[in-house]
Image (cartoon, rainbow, N blue to C red; front, side):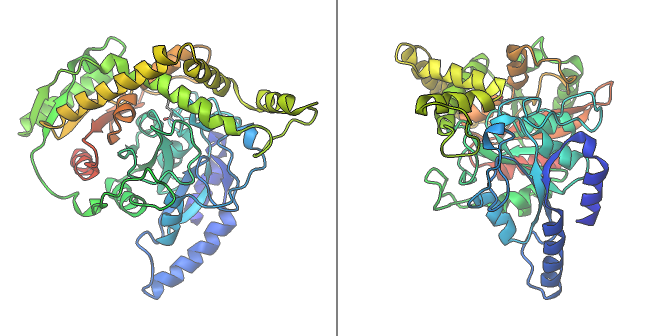
Length: 447
Ligand code: GLN
């Protein structure tokens, strides 16, 4: 704990932590140490974890990096966080992110941007930027983030660490601030596949507080890592031929596919005509869900309340106007428009149908293949400010990551070399529903 606290202290300029629970973590370390000596320690004893500011931790601040939740303290603990605590992991602090997890660069935080530790003029990715940099810059062993449309895998790629988004419903969402409820997943950042596997098997599984969570048995992922097997691997040629893909990322992926083939794995191109529809489908449905989910921030029930509103309508309007940031307002407006009576069928209902087709086509692919490989991101970490005035350019950073969320399948970003500027490149691996074991075993094989 002291080691990580001193790293946090020495790298405050990166703006990673919104709260550091230093005293608590040190006290807990003594308790856990005693348990270890008594042979009574949990499975995660001594694991130091940071949590994104969208996860509830009783009696600790929770703000989703928004002014809207100024002064709000969690009244209960998220199931995933509780399960870590139950196994004697130590929570070291609350990590900066994009406001309400909306963004791809961490520039939408009310607390300012997180900086990439390799080049401080570049973004760490988003929305879980703080959680990625914390693992990258040795401020904790692992972090919990959230991935609605790539927010774990994309920053993991930009920071050269592992980022896992499990199958939708694998981990309880109880205590996770809602953004797009049919997409939201808690995800895990780490430097080692076995850390990620160990954390996943502790936090996944049935939970009486989340009616949508899967009842499927949780495998012992950490014991499956050493299984050697030949994998059948697919790739979608359009994702690699895409002119928007940075040439060095293209070259890295092509080289990796070649190596896998040489090593005796089956590597084949596949047809996936719906790829171009993933991004629009995601942004239509996620904004619609966000507009509904964020209606609860009305100036009455949580956090901020406008000081000088004359009546109730004004109170709602002013509280929301004063505190939501630009990107959150844009999404609420887009989502409200999409759900409005005259446009519901044109956008919302249509996008739901496309989502179903994407899921079916994706599931069909995994009838034949174990793993689908694609880039995690079209570019390596871009300079701070580059896309802030161009939301479309920012959304395009997610072209490869939203597929997994639209289809509900698990995905992981694995570090795979660097570009000419020394910026990390991420390789994305996708698998069928509940095949996290296979995904982690393959990631381990690549590391
Ligand atoms: N970048 C995507 C967005 O802005 C994904 C966010 C997320 O996964 N939380 O919506």
